[in-house]
Length: 340
Ligand code: SAM
Image (cartoon, rainbow, N blue to C red; front, side, top):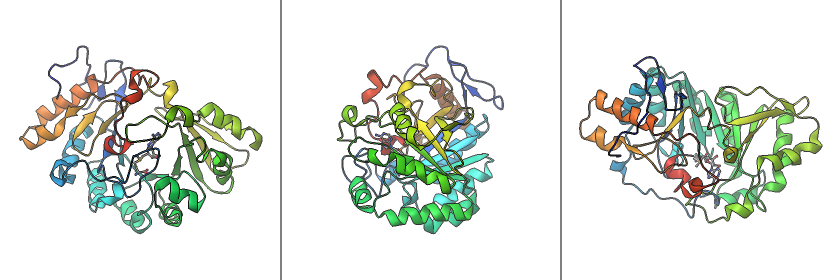
């Protein structure tokens, strides 16, 4: 926990919402519910991920719900559950149900899709609205290689199950990596012609967990757009407020294509999010090592007021931008630990 409160933090009264020093309204929480994963994607982690934490160090569902409840009283509108792989948590349905009961209007999930098909109905019934599924190749053997052992047919089963139960939209996260899957950019885009999927190309970011040479393997959004040039005129879609992606549609396509470009910093200007790690640390920015320790406070009997102060502290610590091109390059220890 930080010793001194940063100057200039601006927070509003309960009900009026949280605002940071740059007058950004903070109403979005990404919650990592575990740092464990059942895959081990080559650009995300160095090897198969075991938890860095003991079970007791991870936030319990009731603890997460207590923190979200406090944020909800300050205008929280959106929660995304991530990890690690969130479906490794057996009580995910209870968490989603609890979030819905707290009145969080927008509840979404990011998953690798290996275990989603069997639980999609129950999660939707509990209040889950949308899902992002990570899939970096359309080729079964290549998928096995990238994920170090994953079965792509299970992911497709989950994508279809998510669509069937009414999780909408279903977004597919693709990280193009030079020499690994960048020859499939057009194939992914072509999926959107007949299928109402949102394909999102996310620029590769440097993380401590990866052994890839990010500099050499990086494929920028501009290059992705250029490669899509042969598919016809891309219609630029209006950008929803706070959206991290620039969105397009191929002529006559049912689905969409999104480009997520963390390096150009465009979405920092309207950043509205905080991240809660699986071990109860509130992180003001994915690329900043600063955290505020909520776990210790929770477990030492802090009242709601004290937790609110810590929350406001984290909001005040939000930097203006991610500095990914500079010092921020090495800031993310592991996507799975912080919650990608
Ligand atoms: N296990 C879940 C999944 O696979 O979707 C959630 C966690 S995963 C860390 C969340 C997202 O982070 C995935 O879409 C993954 O592709 C993305 N990601 C991981 N490492 C990344 C990196 N180095 N650069 C860009 N995106 C990354």
